Length: 139
Image 1 (cartoon, rainbow, N blue to C red):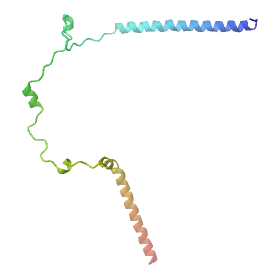
Image 2 (image 1 turned 90 degrees about the vertical axis):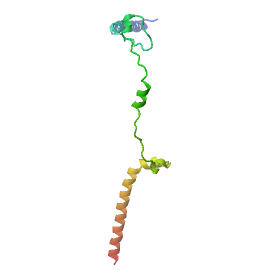
Image 3 (image 1 turned 45 degrees about the horizontal axis):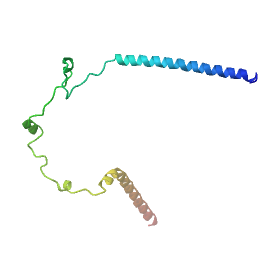
C-alpha cells in the first residue's frame, strides 16, 4: 500500500465503525422499546374465558360459564311464527307469468329513453313548424 491510499482507507474504516456503532445503538434502543411493549402487554388484562360446552371444576371459573339455553317448547315455537290470515288473497296473472328475458335491460335504460322521447317530440315539433313556415312563404 502506498501512503496516498492510507488516509482514504482509514477514513473509510472510521466511517464503517461509526455506522456499526449507530446500528448497535439503534438495535439496543429498539430492544428496550420492545421489552417495554411486552411488559405493558402482559400487564394488560387478559381476556376472560367463556365456557359454552365445558363445565369447569374450579369454583372461580364457574362464574364465567355461560348458562345453557334449551330449545323452546314445541307449542310456543309453532304459535310464534304463524299468522292465521292468508298472505295472498288473489294471485294476479301478471305476477304468475314469467318475465321476458330483457326486462332488466329495459328497466335500466327507462330514464334515458324518457329523455330521448322528450327530445324526439321537440325535434318533430320543430320540423312541423319549419314545414308550415316554408308552406306559408311559398303560397
